[in-house]
Length: 416
Image (tube, rainbow, N blue to C red; front, top):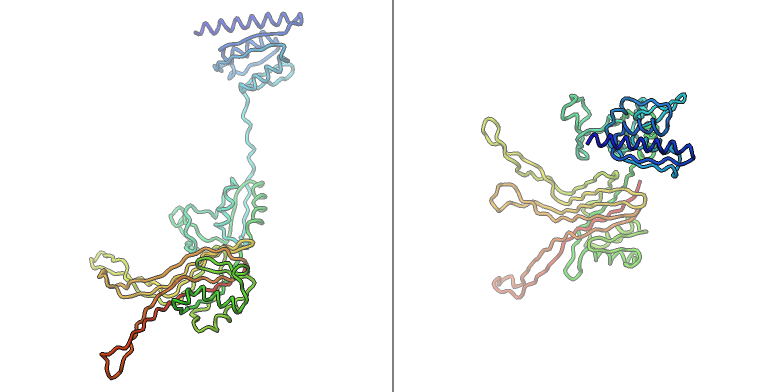
């Protein structure tokens, strides 16, 4: 097989040589190489076709790749074709003082920029937030980054921890961000920080919690509130109020006007009226109730005696808010819960049993908009008999009354 390749190469060389001699008579050169090594191609082209001074690098002479190509002089300049063909093989031709130097192309060395260090004190956002947001855009390193991210509100304290320990990997609140990278990246980082380190926005939530007593004929407390507000404030369901299953939204209405309208009805009793300022992306919570001790897990120390842990759980009227402040609206997640503890009758343990009614909802509220949320209802049946006091055994009649107790929450949001 090797002899066959050599024979083909020699035939090609003679073909090229004849073509070159014919070129003296202005006939175009034509030649064809099939399955010949790169080293042989380079030598034959310069020896028989170009007939020019050349120097071939030793790495090229050991190139054993097999190639095939055909050239027709009618298609263009021979030297331009050879240069393009060598370029496709990763070879470079450098002409100096009338001599062609053929060698492998050298990989261009990457320009390594000198690193710069930039320290930045966040103005509005946390260091961890900025690092997580910006680090995918840069090749440099941020020193505020940690391998393990702790849940929000559960950051490690700002104390010295051993380097390389597990505590050192846990994300911690940081008031300083340090970046090490190329000067061009530092310049870009400064521009990005001016755009992303902006105020997150706060929202002031004013809430009023009502407990409403209604009967079966009066319907839900939400419908009752809508009827009262529509009569006293002149609200219409189709224009100002948007209704759904568990809340109504009021626009262009002050909370004081709503409270005044509802306070005139004895069925509405105010249980709590908190005012809370919550940062965007953080949770706010207000509770009207009590913490009840509940038996927890049992542990067995080395001494062998069982130790019963005690946990305190909240009950009563509980509301949690989680706002996300946008440019035009506030996305609000609301958790509304009414709960109480009763004595356990299942015989599991001596801990009380939690009975709760819970409602979760997500809303998009405009700045200054007022929302009325309902849905937590408790039904109570009462039966009374009528008779003669001096003759207890004689009942003239019985009356049965069924009442509903529903919790209504009114929220008024204002962006700060």
